[in-house]
Image 1 (tube, one colour):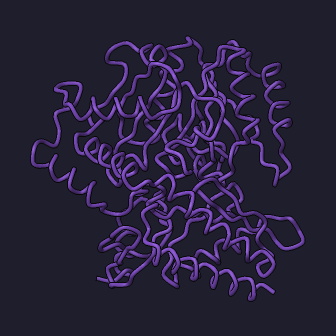
Image 2: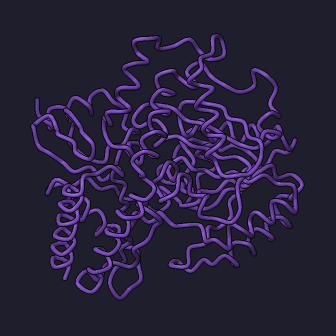
Length: 427
């Protein structure tokens, strides 16, 4: 079976709205490498969009899942509980930033975690409105895509969005939007669109994911926390993509001097198995009445087993430190190419949540065509990359944190060769 044959089959049976970034089909994967159905090897710098931070099929994760499969696969925790669910909740309560009593719930996807965070915030404050930020991504459910600060492709054709959701410009100095601009827009919003007394929560990604890997400025996050406290508004940190050692800390909010009231997480928690969570202040999380939260598959025994194993791996293999080292090497290599690749406008990102942004040389105009050319050329050379950003001109790097040193060096060589070739062809 070839990739092209499978692509033909896919297009005949899968809805068009399910986009696919590559034209390859996986046969097997190990750590940071994927082999397709034709036997070709690829270095994976996507990690399933920051899901397998601990690598494809980490032995500890696989062992834990197999052990759970031999015991039971499903009871629905709301019917018959299990110790591993409680243990994982205890561990997250300890790990999530915030020196206060916490409570946790488990769901299945990042979007579901966001939905439940909003439900909890509304129940705790008895207020309806939520304020998000342009460029942010929070999922494809109706509340998730309403919170998302990008129209195409996430909102196109889906009709009216959810009410009582408002957007403030996210501060990106590279695009001429400062923290002062964002807060001026927020103050104007409070005067003209929604009174702060109606706002249940702010929701923000410490580092925007789909939006372009822009890091929330430290001073901005502190000021947002102050504004929230002034008006009795809760702060939700969406750590679905930033969590679990990706930024060099267990959670990206550990880079800040303030903490969130509620944290959403998914992706890296399960090491490839579906599980998501919401952790927050106990008084806030307990606001919903029994039965108001949960779901049939929420906290699946298999996902919980994987989650506990992932936390073990992050600690034992010191993956936060490794993320810092890998990110520093990547950024150093990219910065060394700035003169020879004039399309590079910015290299950024904490830990190993890094990105390079491309502009048309001398014009300061986003160059999505160049980003896509680099992505496609790298794929031809055996390196899987993903683009992102409101303008589609950013390449993000999300390799497993467990990537072998020699494989990482090989990937950097492919990346450099690709960038140089594409820049030369553009001259």
